[in-house]
Image (cartoon, rainbow, N blue to C red):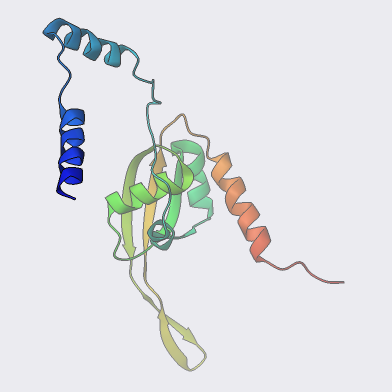
Length: 158
C-alpha cells in the first residue's frame, strides 16, 4: 500500500508542475485573450425572482397615469409599503427587461370612508412612478398586462 500511495503522490506532483514559458509568450497569450473577448450588449438584466413580483402589486391606470405614459414614458405601480426606490427599480428591470431612468415614490395615506351609518377607512398604499429610457416601448408592457387580466377574469357564459 505504501508503494501505491508513493506512486499516486508522484503522479500528482508531476501534473502540478507549472509549464515553463518565457515572459514574451505569456504577454502574447494575454493579449490574444483580450482581443477575442465576446462582445456583450450594453445592459444585461438579472432574471426575475419571486421577491420582484411581491414588490410590484399592480399597475395603476387612470387618466393622469395615461398622460404620464404618453408624455414622459412612465408607468405608475402600486408597490409594497416597505420597498425602497432601488428595490423597485431592480424589480421592474428584472420583470420587464427595460432600462429604468428614474423612480419616484409616494405614500398614500388611508382615507376615512362612510357607508350609511358604518364608518371605516380605505387602506393606504405606496405608489411608484417609474420612468423608462426613451428607447423602450411601453406598448409591450401594456399588452402583457392586458393579456394577464384577460386570463384572470373568467369569460361570461351564455
